[in-house]
Length: 126
Image (cartoon, rainbow, N blue to C red; front, top):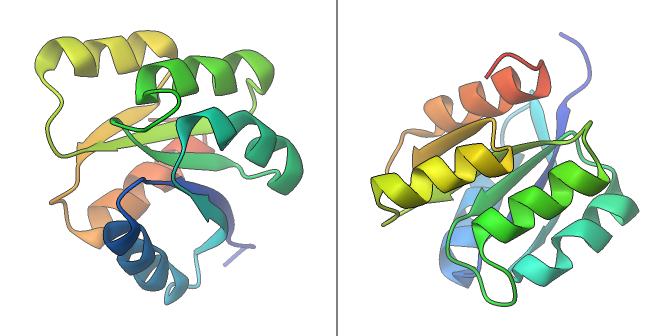
């Protein structure tokens, strides 16, 4: 196995963020390099931590998932974005894809499904 995929985790719900970070941290194939909860902090965090994939919530303070995805893809087109959502409707999900998201999943997915989406995104095959 090669080196782990570097992930920036962006989720405003602290409990969910910490739980997901803990679960991802138990895997050898991914590495959470940083985690935060504000959409306006995503691009500076990408510049600082150089993740391969941003795993990002849809509903965020500062900048929503669509705006943050577009900002990441514009400033760092080499970085993939996988969105997680608990409540986005089909129009919002379509907007995420239009902004450049590689994939969009619901938060109730199994961890393996989320990690598989991250891997596909990192390999450019989402």
